[in-house]
Image 1 (cartoon, rainbow, N blue to C red):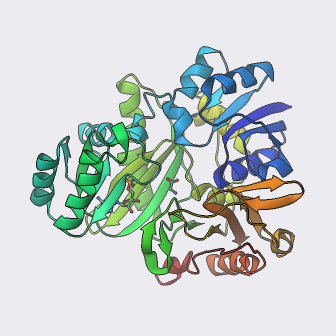
Image 2: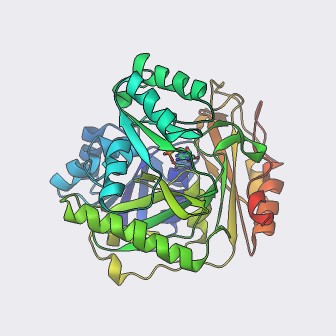
Image 3: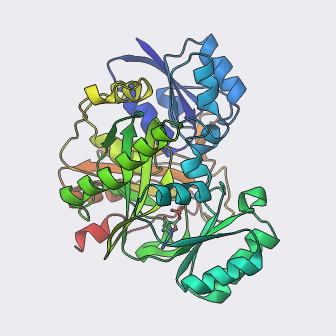
Length: 423
Ligand code: AMP
Ligand code: GLY
């Protein structure tokens, strides 16, 4: 039986642990550092997700057969390069390949080199030039810090004043430090935003069912951007034809380009796309599973996840058939009051068994156990997930279950999946 290590501590990692536990090939799952939910179904290991040395040491001493990387930070720190150097199998791209997410400049230049459809853009390192570029492109305009900025590095600006203020914060006040040395200024696009994630080895791409994240904090996409307040899959906004086109022009082009440029890509390639009137345009790459996309996608995966991830890591994905269940899945994120700003931690959580007795699956994100009590420990606390034969039923299961859950000041959006029903 295989021994698996998952790196990370969010809802995504709980969903990965939950799915990998169902594999007939998997015997033991470790999660570093994990959360209050992974503790109940796997073995939490007290190692930080970005402590590459300690993770490699753990994997070697515990004879881990496959390590699965959740977040981008360890990838940017070269966790994959380190594991590969040790001869340990790992799912996730090298630090060089991870630049598709860790540098917006690299990503945009890569898209341009390979003819991948994306918005017109400029690059700047100082305020005056940046302000000129904003005026050349006009508003709305997306201003993006080049490096990793914990999901806060992008602002879509609707006036020059708003763009100037954000540029000042990034380039002059340097709120993101060196991650904001350079900015990408990009023409604003409009349309439905979708997440197309694909399993990849260095030659093959296999798209997953397409998901739609809900990034804004409040209903009707109002309020500040968050890591994601909920998600559903599959989305009706994309036809099989358009998905085939995205697979070819975005996913396969990227995998082929990365291989040709000497940085072969293995892992999940996540394309964040806007479906515009001129066709799909790529907004961003992520080099990992999405959160909360994973919580809505994996419950519908029929094929053994371990087999797929192992095939990606060993360049044998072309021999694997990936199958999906019919039906729909909806994940509603319950967040702490104040998120994505400052929020309290340590509030007792109740009602999870009642929620699960209604048929929902509750993925933990920011939770931990103190004594016997489960308490909040992060901004996004839980992802209450309903699966059913169709989207309206999945929404009903998720929201009925949310009604059972309680912690002080709990916030959630009431309209996850609603856009798809308005179609
Ligand atoms: P990114 O990290 O580049 O995906 O940007 C974060 C969010 O900003 C995206 O999920 C979109 O909602 C929004 N965004 C990024 N680029 C654009 C753009 N060119 N036009 C409109 N919205 C954008
Ligand atoms: N849900 C957006 C992300 O994972 O980046």
